[in-house]
Length: 216
Image 1 (cartoon, helix red, strand yellow):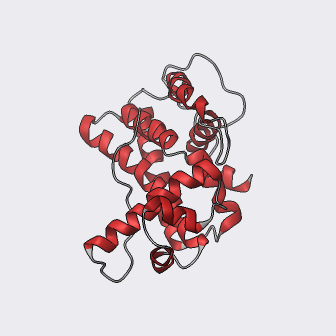
Image 2 (cartoon, one colour):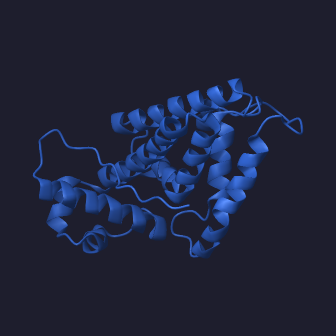
């Protein structure tokens, strides 16, 4: 499963010309690719080269590395949420929407990008909080709907889903073993099938929430 939609990018307060918007989108797309390949410390001039723009264009859009990393992480979260929304609108099937979210999150390499927020910039930045809250609220609502429909086992939480996605869609950013990608969607689908109701076992402990993850 692959993701082909254009990367959503937050527009700055001032209106940009069409070519400036395209440049900004190219920068975010190139940065996402290179962060996954090499980690968040990749030189900005290398990102500019891959995006096909000058260094000045990068700094005109993003005054520092933190701003660019934050935009990449937020745009990835927005894409995964949009995938779930589209699936729900197209089919009305909550579990299918959950599957679409999970596979898109793997394609977008959330496991590689989200850990960057813990070490590179303010985790409470309004843009990041807005994207994260939208993601949590939508996916939890979809999970609740799937449980009510008898599709999803009742003893799992949003945190359980995200931990599994992170673990099954490795390697993390900068890792050299990207060839394991060919197994990711196979293993994610095995996991998703295990989420279906009726449950065939009793899970130890309690459902993991996003708040539990933050505390950990």
